[in-house]
Image 1: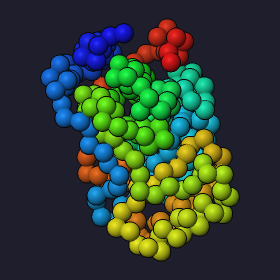
Image 2: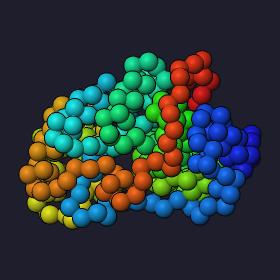
Image 3: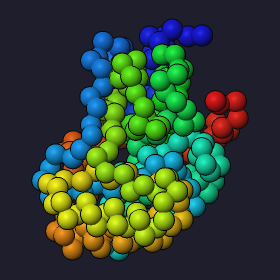
Image 4: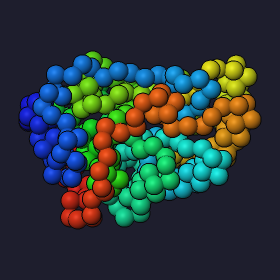
Amino acid sequence: MLSSLVFTLLSLAVTFVLGAPSHLVPTPALAKRAPAQVITKCTVPNTAALTFDDGPYVYLYDIGKALTAAGAVGTFFFNGHNFGPCIYDVDQAKRVKWAFDKGHQVASHTWGHKHLTNLTADQLHHQMWLVEEALIKITGVMPAFMRPPYGEYNDMVREVAGIRGQTIVTWDFDSGDTWNITTQESQQRYTDLIKTKPNTILALNHEVRQQTAQVIVPFAIKALKDAGYRLVSLAECLGKPAYQWQAAPQPRDASWTCAGKP
């Protein structure tokens, strides 16, 4: 097993090969970075960030089109493979690129949606790097934010994320769409939240739920806009850059595969 530092340096070398501008490629000094900051809420007043975990999936277009029609953007935390096929599959990669091209923010939900607190430092680096690599190839961006699966993190997760230049993001509102509650109950959760008039909202939803994409999201968009919130990306609601750097997307080749990746 590679040591954490060696793995980090190897990842950085691969990043360079993938085409990042030379003046934007991270340096080995990243290994001395402080543990990642953990974000739980937006900071820019009157903003609401609708975020979506577990994709890419077939309902991404429904969500993205609903947001675009409302003059809004969302944030998609992608896995390499989880509920759907491999992120490198032609249709999956098209979904990721489409979301990015439409102005939605793309971010990391790690590769295989594992319980990160059960992993070693090297395994953590690997889980984070694999999805970063996919986003670099497909969209040309190195994400600045990652969301740990299940919202689980510990000191080691923060240390590894910090080395990788990532900020950890959780949420301050859960639509409950993975709790086996009804669509009406999820909608009521949004209604009850809005009644409390929070200054900002960082909402967790799941791209892989049909009712979320086709019913809850349109409802939430209208309710939040009617309440006067600006529906923005995670980065905008924090006043921070969405990406560590950006370059040209990479052409598809034989490396666009999930084969042999955990």
